[in-house]
Length: 194
Image (tube, rainbow, N blue to C red; front, side, top):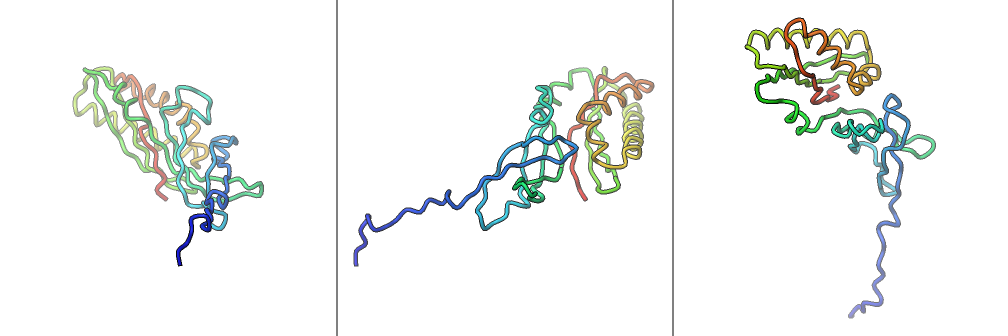
């Protein structure tokens, strides 16, 4: 038996799919950051989505920071709520900040909050090239200041706004000037690890 082309019916798969809005955690704002598509019989929970910090803060200077969220739950209003998973700055931003004749001091720190644990990677940029001994003392001072801020914040919801606004970085640069003058500090990456 030969099947004619007219007898085959085309089924549009998009008719089975549904669009649902995505909202960030409450401490990052209450605006919809995008939409995700999923099949009506399959859940979108567990997916990872990215957005720039500039879309949340409405500030052009924050577009170089990418936030990472995990779709966590679907609320009553059919809105997908997310969980913060981390953030990362554009690598070009760091390359532009490090100039000839200055030193770059990288630091990795694990911070424990009441509800979760994060890994924070920072870059401290000095005004001039420094010796290894000065690098070690600057790195130790940055570690101490970040730990102090972590202990005063207690939760990641209180810690992140000061990082995203640049207050933590400005305060650390001001405090390390007693050891050696630094141009700026950049939070390169934050990862939620537990």
